Image (cartoon, rainbow, N blue to C red; front, side):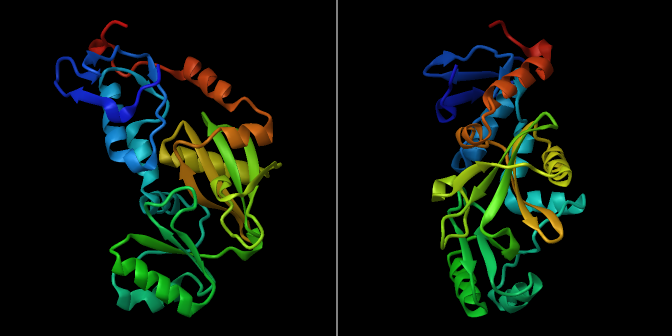
Amino acid sequence: MVLNVLRCYMDVVPSKPEIHLNGEIVPAFDAVIPRIGASVTFYGTAVLRQFEMMGAFPLNESVAISRSRDKLRSLQLLSRKGVGLPSTGFAHDPDDIPDLIKMVGGAPLVIKLLEGTQGIGVVLAETKKAAESVIEAFMGLKANIMVQEYIKEAGGADIRCLVVGEKVVAAMKRQALPGEFRSNLHRGGSASLVKITPGERATAINAAKIMGLNVAGVDLLRSERGPLVMEVNSSPGLEGIENASGKDVAGLIIDFIEKKGKPHNTRTRGKG
């Protein structure tokens, strides 16, 4: 069954938690595959928590999805575990902008909206003056942003590793269009098959594990100091990587659920 998460509503009771849809009780499922858009993370994870309370096995747990959706928090967690990252800065006061720019190695640098997805809200500032103007503008709009060093040697390309159950099952190289530095396929980037190194494989698996995700799209940059994690995505798109790699990633995800899917709490499960 495919459920519209925004149309699901919940009866939060200790004895028999329920989810309703269109006036009817949703049956208890053995497993659920959350595909929650970034704009509905709060409500979507609330519905997923309810399924967890009902005993369903979640492909990715609600707490892990929330953790990975907070870009700054996820980078802090990865940093604490020693994972390679681009130098990243975060500040609140416009007076701190000059030092913030200096902290990440100066211009050119990348400015990212924390709530942005698919490359939206990501700006490359090529000069210190441009960086100051963009950061001031975002701060003036009360937008939460972070600044990151620009990894020039990556050449506008990144590596998307698809991790399923602590294995990289597929990988692709995403290359930005000429004159564009964002390699997202939604921004017109191209995807091709790529052979990843043992270090890149280990970094991707470790990043997904730190986030607590069974399935993750881990985006890496190839830098002079080794692989750097840009982002860990809890609802990675499958079409692009399946086309580039020739792998049936969706089938591998179902195989994982069949092997690992165990109900959380059989005492609260209804029939169905």
